[in-house]
Image (cartoon, rainbow, N blue to C red; front, side, top):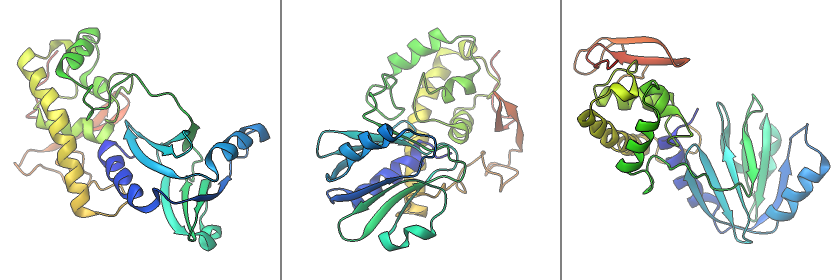
Length: 262
């Protein structure tokens, strides 16, 4: 599943490709929706322009010139594709397509049919991990409300912080030298400050790594640079053995150097 760094890069590149271009047609491929569902989307998305694409947590929000918007959550295997409108027929598992003046189409596809498109979705009150609202005071308030919660479960809980998923939770905990088996309320105050700072630094580092590796991507998940959550390596650059296991129902990568607080 794309996480915050991936989606940050997707949004940046989609802005370059489709913003301020007239949407000439909208096609939706849901099989289980009533006709009224499609009518509302057609009325509010066709014959307007995308003015801006923002990332919010694990979703992208498309703002439209007519005041409407729609959010896209790619889920596990959704993909953005930009292609010639005439080539749309060769793309399988389509969810939604937007044709633009000039002959290009933006298609969202998902072979599992799980990707979600929501019209005029309300803005979440939960802060994005790289937003100004994600302050240390907010972080500590959530820690105090979740003292018995596993720390990995805390980081990936989208009702606490939006944008962090399985891979980057492992990377953040490795950099902060905290075991993913730790209990949130048992972590010392100075380590919690380190963890908060590490969340921001790791996510910004990952964005730069992805941009360097695939500067124009709108659909690739680049993971080869990750230090622990990486199936291609068995030890870290420091020579630490990388262990794997299931924590919080997630396949987890960690090292013996990470301290467990229980």
